Image (cartoon, rainbow, N blue to C red; front, side):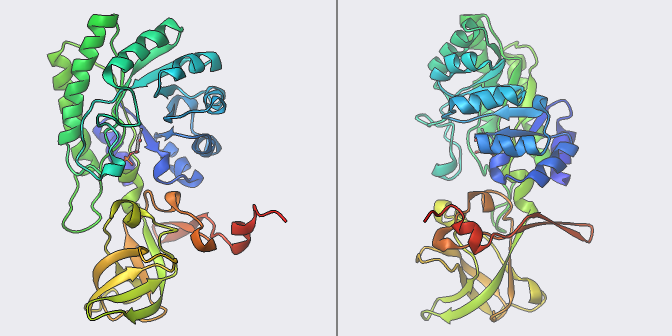
Amino acid sequence: MARARAYREAAPSALIVYGVKAFPNVALLRLFAGEGLGADVSTLGELTYARKAGVAGERLIVHGNNKSDEELSAAVASGASLVVLDALDEVERAAAAGVPRVLIRVTPGIDAETHDAIKTGHHGSKFGLPPRQAREAVRLARAAGLDVAGLHVHIGSQLLDTSGVRMTIDWLAAFAAECRVELGWTPEIVNLGGGLGIQYVEDEPAPSPGEFVRALLTELDRAWRRHDLPEPRLVLEPGRSLVGPAAYTLYRVGVVKQASETATYVAVDGGMSDNPRPQLYGARYSALLANRAAEKPAGSFAVCGKHCESGDVMIESVALPEPRRGDLLAVPCTGAYTLGMGSNYNALPRPAAVLAAEGKARLIRRRETVEDVLRLEQG
Ligand SMILES: Cc1ncc(COP(=O)(O)O)c(C=O)c1O
């Protein structure tokens, strides 16, 4: 929760909404709501999590690059304060569903410095509208009677510096100034999405939430003044930077196998089904033996999962004490885009999630059973 507070303190007048996709969980959403945060949801399922957690409509933002009519109607029923339009055909459909207030998601054509799969604001992205279409969406939405409150932009995730977002703010100010000239409209709300990265491994540091937000606020103020635009209300949608560093995944060590002169595998009781990021993005992690953390490293080991894929390797090389069957291997920084992106590959039940603070622990998602995995089977 310290990171949620850091966001709030750095931007007290902004609306901060948790990017639920990072880890959908009702108990966590309740805790964030208690800290004054809302929720950014991108599917009916995520919206249902937020509603179950009692997130107030005025702090609910509905996204999605392919919203169904059911999702638009559910957004209206939930009282969501903002629906972010991501396609021209959503204008009429949102108006027909009775959506009152919208943002237009614009694609600035900025290539964020991050893995290709988590860039979203580049030219040709599947997200948002290219500038000319975005201006057209503002015009059409206003003509359809929608309250077009502002603009949304999100250039990507796991950003390790502020340069891309600062450049985006400059671009957005120029775009807003063009909207004023062409449409006589300026944004009341500027939603800069999420994106702040976290330090997964020692050699890749990340800014703190406070540093990140202060840099954005300075740039926003400068860019908006330069174009003589009215001061906007800021919205931020952090996901990874709120929950990522908070979690350790605990695995039980099974087989330890010297596969070659250079590779000794430590096999654990999970893998790509509870954390597909190494396979999706070449993500790097560190690890420690939680039950022998004070012991000196005995060498470098590869950590692999138990799935039937040679690529099911979580860490290529990590220094550990001599691992033994039964040891507890802890992988830090696994709170974001891990369990939420998990699967039941190899019919493996997914692990539980436990909240631990001040010497107390609470189950916030129970461990799956093989019966859970089979529950949709018929016949
Ligand atoms: C529109 C939008 N907002 C917020 C987020 C959360 O991003 P992050 O987890 O990098 O903070 C994402 C994730 O990609 C997103 O697409």
